[in-house]
Image (cartoon, rainbow, N blue to C red):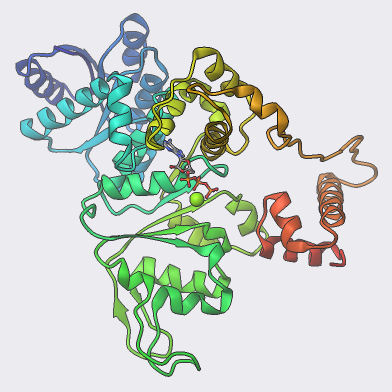
Length: 448
Ligand SMILES: Nc1ncnc2c1ncn2[C@@H]1O[C@H](COP(=O)(O)OP(=O)(O)OP(=O)(O)O)[C@@H](O)[C@H]1O
Ligand SMILES: [Mg+2]
């Protein structure tokens, strides 16, 4: 039996839903609107909150969703909407809803959705062992609240062909997240094709992605399928999407909007049924502002935004990750609590990937059957402090834009100096794309 808060302003609907839930054996508390719901949430903990979207002539249900998402312990949240609009579903998910039902709601649907939501809560309280066991099929390890929210959003987005844009620092599991979406989607039996945009030379991009026909260019001695066709029926994962050349961005937009594309050198249109996922560790909005990423494509990709938290935002997951990563490496070594605590203290700017690498280094260099963390003292790559040296930034006579441009210029000049004028390395240091640094060097009139 679960405690359910039902928020619905319409008397009849409230009674029908409430009776339906009672016959399923739950305890129901009803409210007629967001104000009553606020009180109820303050007074009592609920396992599940089921709320109508349209109340009092506005989307008041979204307020209930966010109030419920903020209460402790956090209930599961289901939204009932009269309009099956994608935007509302996405908004509700952004705010923390688990799922949504479209009116008229049948008792079967209601029953199924409620059980699924309640069951998913049980899953999150499952033992660590089960979380680890399932990690081998692309599952994201971590039981912290922030990771649970990410997982739920990915799971929710997986059900339909929404485009998901996964952002996050390097090593936070963006690719794992993409595989997770694919595995939880109706396309899971079909291909999952990752495309590492940064690794494809600009001149070959179009043909890699869309294929070519014989004779399209000098080295094209046969017809060739591209990655889009290879992913037909399945999922195409565009990793490091910020590195995609502008002319290809136009073609991708067309694929997203019309599901059609052309092989290089061919006149006829081809059709592809692919679901697109994309990832980036760059600030795409800044790249849009700088004119190196198309705004229309950005919005088309960013239907469901998912930000992967850094390891610093979920330190409580580190012990579990250590156990799981060692297990994945096939190691049976035990790690004492002291060592785990010390590892968890490290800055780990490279996130899970860095943790993985550190464990490998420790395994390689420790002797005996325990990890010797003092080994790490011999290495100075563990605490890489980036020197930015921004002492005394002031507006001077100019405005904010001028001041920011001054800072930008200084950081870029310093990076160029450190890398002996190597723009590729400087871009890497600054965490921006090569195209972005080229654009900035030109804009600021810095010689490279
Ligand atoms: N939540 C997680 N659970 C289990 N393994 C993870 C998790 N996050 C990351 N990893 C592991 O860390 C490594 C890096 O993950 P991944 O390649 O997905 O990161 P990324 O965000 O794509 O990084 P980059 O931006 O550098 O490409 C992989 O070995 C992956 O298996
Ligand atoms: Mg990656």
